[in-house]
Structure formats: structure tokens, C-alpha cells
Image (cartoon, rainbow over all chains, first blue to last red; front, top):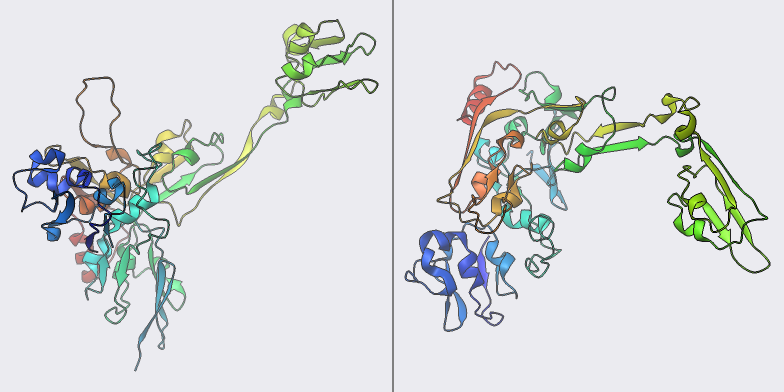
Length: 76
Length: 365
């Protein structure tokens, strides 16, 4: 399984960034979609769109997909 | 050359080898807990446990903790469906280790049509669940609590007429066909036709419970009714007629021996025994409350705590060890490694084979 993003659909809300349990463990200060360890987290909002930084850290729990209000991030 | 044939249907599959001895391995996706015992046990590394958290969330979304929040979880599409395990049929040797160690019989190896759990040379877990019909009062508590919908309770209720006694009559000369009694009757026993010229009133004595509401509300004195239980006692009622009868069935294919049925049973009717004993612990520091474990648990043993009031500080996720079967699916699914499940005891039939003994020891902590 692979984590996929579609920037065309992304609203830049950052809910996936906050909800991701791996992100929360790496960088608890991520609230609001911005944090100190940008490069180390799984995904982060950059210039208003979601971007994958370390998708290899993804544990495939599906939390991001569950919270995304549009079809911008999913596992397949 | 003898080759394995794989036949896939929905998410279930069969792997067959036709030789002098016909071996067939069937996988039932809906039974699988996602524990991964098969993956770690397979001697030829043919089995992979798939990322089933997404699948589990698809199955349970909206009815666990997102009830009423359909907008959340909308991205879990109906067609999204992942096979919980994959088996490479070119690697599989149909040895049956996965089947022998599967705690819920999601994988079943048959040799010439006989499942290995019926063959003494293979080990079997000593696990069971049963409902004693002599003790069962058919309250359906277990049917509702069962996380796998494995229990069906069919009950036959006594006739209402056998539980009440009394008399009721309508005086047609007094009745004004207003329909007050019909609207008030809690048992829907009265039918009044109010149409001019066709007026009628009928009381169904099989439905009437002699509550006397109609008599009290009647604007005239048309209804004469008396409850015999109230005035004389229940001497003309046979208690034998008041018994709820029925029968109970546990679907052995779906049951995972979690023990909810026994836990909620108000009598001693439901009994169970788990294949594994051990412990489950959640490290609240590591847990980020994503809920993957809650969704994946096949036993409803994990849950988010419910707040007792504003300002209360709670644990992220609570585990109910009584109903946990120590399958470790949650520990495998947890993205943060916050769950520790220990399998300390495995109850299985005696086995002489060293390979099987080692395999059973390997899944023990």
C-alpha cells in the first residue's frame, strides 16, 4: 500500500497533518499544519497544498484519509 | 509437474494441489482477525498481512465513534476492499501450519476433503463458545453484544391473551362512536368505524390487556370492563403459558471466542473459553488516539473513553482485557507502537511433532 496525494483536490486545511499519529509522534508542535520539523514528518502543507515529505514513515493506518474532507490524500 | 491452483472469489480464495492426496487451503476474509500469526508462522514466507487498518475502518466507519459525522470518513468508498492477507501460491507448499495456528479458522487446510482440525496429528486450540438452552432466557443480550454478529437468538413470545385475564364489553346503545377509546388503546385492540350510517366498534379480546384506559376515558358509559387479575388474583392464569421459548445458535465460523456473550449474560447460559491467555497494555504516552486499534479489534475490546464531564482528563484509548483474545492485530496496526499484547498461555491439544511444538512456542511470549 502506498500513500498518495492529489494536490488539485487539496484545500490546504492541514487536518491530515494534525490527525496523522506518526506526525504527532515526530513533531507534536504540528498543530495548525505548520511545525518545526517540516522535513521529517510524513506530510505537511506547503504553499497551501499538501505535500509528502517522508511517505516511507507511513504506517498505513488510514487516519488521514478518514479526516480529509475532499479526495486529496489516500492509501491505495 | 504438480502445480498449485489459486481461485479467488471476492476477497476469499482457495489454493489447491491435485496430487494423489488433494490438499486445499481456503481463506475466509470476513472471519480473519488480521492477527498475522499465519504470516509469522509460514515456513516458506508465502503469506503477507496486508495494511488492513484502512479496510477495517471502511467496514466500521460511521457506526463506532463517527456516528452522526458522515462527512468525516466519506473518503472510504464502498468499493474499497482489501484482502486481509495475500498468499503467493507459487511459494505455498500447503503444509497447513497457517491453518493449524489460525485462532479463528479463517484459513482452513483440508486433506482429501477433511479439515485438519478433525485430524488428530494436527494441533487444535481448546477454545469454545456455547449457550445452554436450559439456562437461556432468550433476552438477546448476547446477540446485541456479539462484535461479530455470530449469535442468533430466535424467541417465541407467549400469547398476550395468556398473560392477562378479564372481561370487556361494549354497550352499543350507549356508544357514540367518538373513537376516543381507539386512539387511547395502548394495545391497538379497538377499531371504531366513525362514518355516519356505518358506525361500529369492535374490540379484539386477543389483544386487550384489560388496562381499563378505554373504560375510564369513555365520555359515555359504553364500555364495561374489569381486570380479573386486579380483583381476584391470577388464579385462572397458567404460569406455564407465560414462558418465553426459543433457541440460540452461535455461528462457529464467525465466533472469535471473545467472551462478550458470557460477560453480558444475566444467567449462566453463555460460556466460552479463549485459545490464548495473556495481557494487553496501552502506553498512553505513545498513543496519539488515531483509533486504528479501535477499528481493527475484532472483539470490541478497545474503545475511546467517554468523558464524564468538562475538564476531565482521560486515557486516550482503554482496553478491556476480559474480552481481548490476545490476537495482537491492534499491536500490529498501531502506527506508534503504543500497544503491547502478551500471549502467555496457549491452550491446545497435545502434539508430538517438534515442528508444531516450536511453531506454537514461537507465538507465545
